[in-house]
Image (cartoon, rainbow, N blue to C red; front, side, top):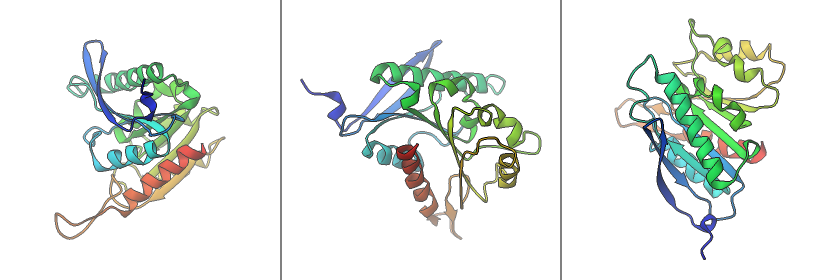
Length: 225
């Protein structure tokens, strides 16, 4: 009998949650897995995008099962309910895969990006290791108010990674908030746009060096949490 954990493969799964289908993509390590990593997307930057694809490859090569998800068809169909539905999508994917592969919250890492960083509240106890990529903040919805629920948790291993030029959150808000925090998370600031990409003069001129740095940094964080 072949041990499924020693197969380096990618699987498509469908998770049902209140008649909503959540598409997931699973990267299996080539060794006995060390833990489970779930990657929640942004609104439009989804699981097949370059950052998530290369993150999954890098992390699975380090010995972790990596589950990427896309939102269900209904999740973003109504702005009034999208946060609630996205939170349910993430929660159900984590629970299903913890049950499938036998990992506890202590062995689970949740990586969320942009929009999804704001809807992980009900999944906090399912993943005691959290990495927020490009969290959102504004004058109306400050970083402090948006993320106070996770910053107050002393039992969470938390890391935040953002570009100094990110148009969806002024990094100064993060510094001001963390100056008052009782437990400091890991904070890494790089450069580039909301996806850590430097754009050149032409429409096809992209520099991914900072996005590649994020991939290395996230992999290192998971190994050292």
